[in-house]
Image 1 (tube, rainbow, N blue to C red):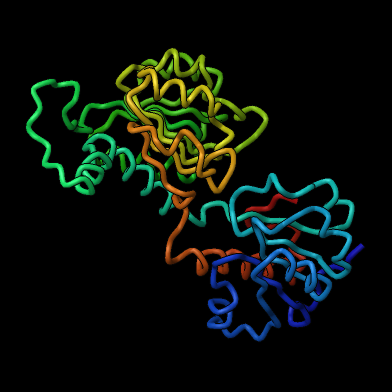
Image 2: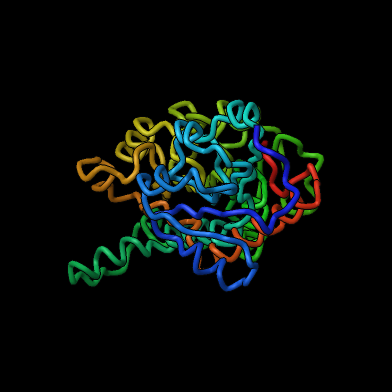
Length: 325
């Protein structure tokens, strides 16, 4: 089992990501800690034996544990930790923390941007622009752009991201209702908050349904055909959560047959979305390539959490920021 953290100055940190400039950003902090960055799974496998601390997300595979004799702490770059075998980490005495809240602003702003884009039909405007089409005025009220004031937003999962989304929605005079496992912890953010088991009763009220919940066994395929069947035909689904929170065949059917008005989806079951996926050609769907959490501040925000956790571990503090294991 790895030894406890006593001398953080002796640590070697491995940053592992395909794109994020973690090492360069960390170097600007001038901590004096040894560190290096790898840019691929193979590089990670080759260099992991040198690391006491690993900062990683998508590159992680549980088989790497067999090649990590010094590893004592993993700081996930993302909020999701379903890729980690937590029991195996505990057995080896390896601590784990996530980056929950690191992209709170980015994701909530992406969600409200998606809501605005759908209401104002910005996506169809861009489509028309590419085809050099100047759309005429519309007589059919159901086909016109809309306003958000007075519309109801249902937020599924009122955590850090959902709470900020509620605040943004209120700035547009929306009615906000939400689900949260413990409604008693909510103060003044929303008009109503309910436990998750009330979801099917809340969906018929919503003009927009925004998913900001984690992926768990309870939220897998949470939005399925039964959920779409009770939504308003003029409602929109906004998925800022994991792709597997939505039953994709049911979503495709609901979009194609007009069960709902449209959707904005940032996460899919399989990513990158395959080139032959039928979702690419669905007109009432706004796709973003898992970029809701992208922000120019991402590296800085993750490193803030990392340094706080290294300080706590160095002081022998058992409680980590965003502790998982």
